[in-house]
Length: 83
Image 1 (cartoon, rainbow, N blue to C red):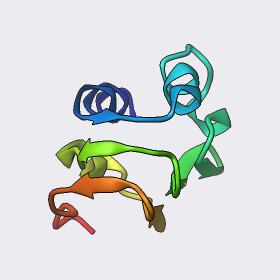
Image 2 (image 1 turned 180 degrees about the horizontal axis):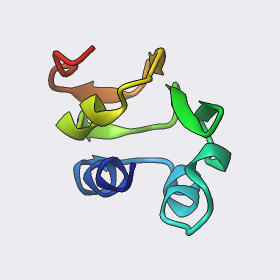
Image 3 (image 1 turned 45 degrees about the vertical axis):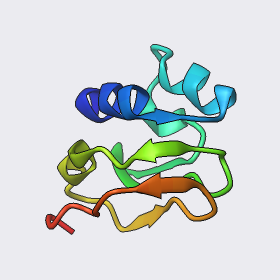
Image 4 (image 1 turned 30 degrees about the vertical axis):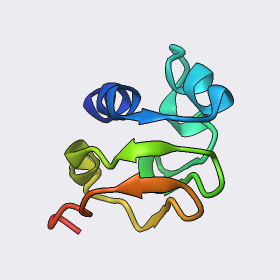
């Protein structure tokens, strides 16, 4: 998940709250918008977070992801084919 964290910060701008939490040393399962099951990320829900930029390809590294909600942001790019 570290690669996704850094790629997201490099390619997106937006909610300072999201960034401050995602750049902390806390477990990603406690981050705003992230849901885990048995320690594995299964959902990333960041709708309406004022995110602007390109969706990082590293999001495809989340092999157990079931929900990806980035609606009502200003994102462009493609969702990786891994989904």
